[in-house]
Length: 78
Image (cartoon, rainbow, N blue to C red; front, top):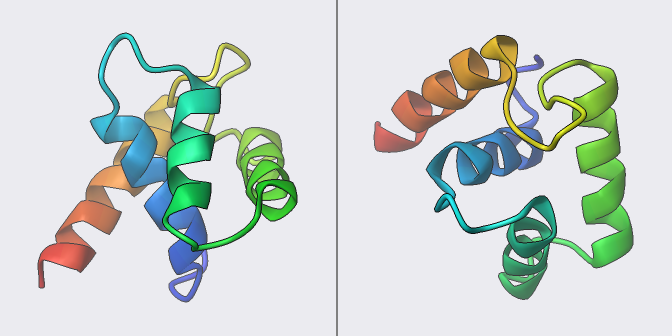
């Protein structure tokens, strides 16, 4: 993943931190409500993350997604 793609990293981090009862749609709505982007762009980012195999078909993170989300978490802590 490109170092500069903060939006994708924020999405992965949000998925990693989600509560068990939250769905992929809940996470998308929450991110849109932050004003980071609109729903169309949000869905596009999530579709791209699925195509790049960071998100599984069931909406969870793949091992690749978990690793990238953990890197994002460390990046934002600095």
